[in-house]
Image 1 (cartoon, rainbow, N blue to C red):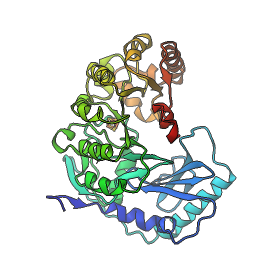
Image 2: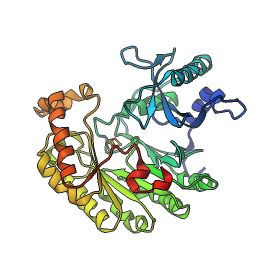
Image 3: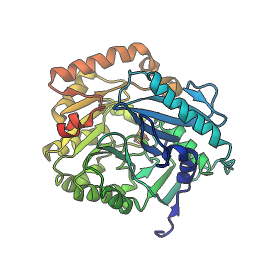
Image 4: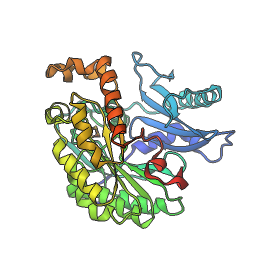
Length: 387
Ligand code: SF4
């Protein structure tokens, strides 16, 4: 163990619950397990007939829609990286099999005692057994941390990440007030990349920001990038922090590397209202420009679309990026208080998104910026051999 680091016991919960699906002894007819994870609730990625199915286990809640309910979980299932394609009959049979496994095994999970809610800041150094999670052919993701001190109130992952903490018997802490630091991430990654086909690695898809302020002390993201460089993998970074610039010399050494910034408005007041822990928008635009000048592939994610002057945003961002993704605030009903606090209720309505999103998409297209939903990162990076 490194210093005060603790072994994360949550992996044991996932391994026990999914054991019949993970075990290589079991014959699998027509499907494969791509990976399993424990950081946003419990999840599995399954491959069938050249497409991927994401199965996610959330806390039991009868008020939320889901694919199936068990005694302890809501189980959600959908095609991965192909929003809009519903599960077909064979997919559903496969997911039904997963549901049966969960029902059989959840009875044997211990009752997780949860200490009372704490208001303290929780920075925990942990040692993990796995860090590079496959998510399809030559595609992976990697979270150097779990949790995010930027603490955007609309962060969709917060309830699921809290459920993971509950499964590990950790107290509830408000989102933005805890982070697990994977102090052995680079060491584990160095073992994992041996024998794996090089590919695209997303840092970090959602459960953390790889350049939150803790990175300045721990440099877990940097250490992982150094391993990826040696192994000829391609990092695809998404952040709200200009701290990524401190890794620019390292990123330039990759044959390909992509840096994307979330830029949800042109108006920094919106940043202060909705994501006050993240860097000012001007700093993000400057950092994006520096990444572009350094020859990196650059992207912007206009999400969640917040009140803005869309023409001004298009003019600011277009010269700095090759591709852009535009998306609305999901689950907006959960965040109405944020809008109401600043008299912005109109921006939480379907009419707002229906007006703003096409304007942005048309504006970027007119400027020659490629629209990409990031479902195909290989195409995004022009690496056809990995598609
Ligand atoms: S920066 Fe990203 S990961 Fe962090 S709280 Fe905000 S949305 Fe969530």
